[in-house]
Length: 256
Length: 328
Image (cartoon, rainbow over all chains, first blue to last red; front, side, top):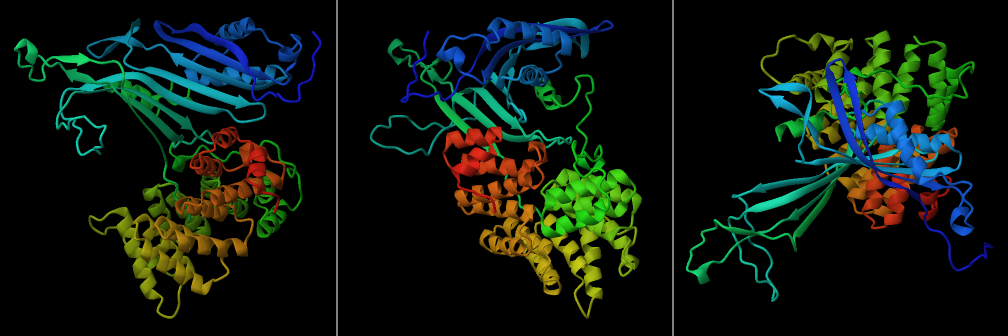
């Protein structure tokens, strides 16, 4: 296919890869077994755009190969943490080829917990405990240092009392009643960035982003049925939900 | 749930999964990380040249030359000391601490190294270690060592050593000892008595008005005491005296952020990073991570997502072009 140049359109960003590559890695140390199961999205950006423009595939690393690479690197390098494995994957794609400009990996870890009886941990039995989902994303440009974010999501928590909401602004569209006591439920999403330096720097967490929806539970009005529901029976309402976000970082101190 | 939190706290992706040890605190640092490529590795007179480069304000070149001098003679305490103070000026605190500690292993009574180490510990929030270094400073100082007693009753380490320094200051009826005043200034920073710290550094400056390190310390004290406008004036004095003083330019940027002058803050950080990079074609690893972190914060307050992305990925050229920061 002949390529006709277009002066009005240009590339902003390109990238391609494989999503949802699943791998489980087991390390056996005698009778004690370690387990990590992960789900990875891998994306790379190539130097040339000829695959987009002319259909020339000669530079393309197939996404099937990307999938195979995830499998193979799990075997070759092992998997300790999702962060380290993500770093290994980025490093591989940037150094094994000379035409990859950028690598991005997003990885989630399956919440396997070692079975525990009376404080004694089982050597090789686990239970899936989805209290929270650990994830990370690593992005690295060719010749650059990797940027690592880690996080926790889908951690649903609830309290049945000692939460209130009052003293808010009222305008002509406000119908919400103030309350001193209510059920409060949220699902925590938190993501933080590591300030990776060469030396060991245990103050490595630089910035933390937290997003928490307010998942509402409404007391069901039963007066029309002649019942007095004293905040005992609630209707869980998925949507709409309030959404609260905040990002914090260390207060920058001046240095003597 | 408790186990989940403990699990999260223990996870440190820098470590092997087997070692569940706590992270190593900087006061027991693993040692100094030398630059991987050093064009001055076999340079003769590396120490003298390093000193000269530091004097000229080319801190990155000074660091490389001093590293070369140390590689040639690992027991050169003076080189370790100079490397430590230069790295601090170059806004690389961990490297400074490692160097100064190594110097003190070789020369435990080196007063300048002890004071510089106390400053670095203070900056790192390590109160106990800073007090310890200052106590050692007094103990090794001929003029004041007699003041040191072992048991002082149930006071805190900070109060103990502060009392020592205050007693020492009272001995100087005729004049001001600028080094003692520096120690006092550091201690008042630790106790958050910023006004007293300002007095101490100002007293030191009355004896050494050309000392750009003191001007920066005064500025930082003012800044941490929320006197940002005055801090800017102090930093400007320091930078007039030594335009290559990276730490002071970093501090100036921080004060700009506090004053809401985000563009100026970014400009200062970019200038500092450019000075570091330009010095000896160093890689990203040799630019100060603190400055990059502060730059990200300043840009994040400007609502320019594409620039924030560039800052995230360390694209200095793009940012310099966007903010029209040229070569000095």
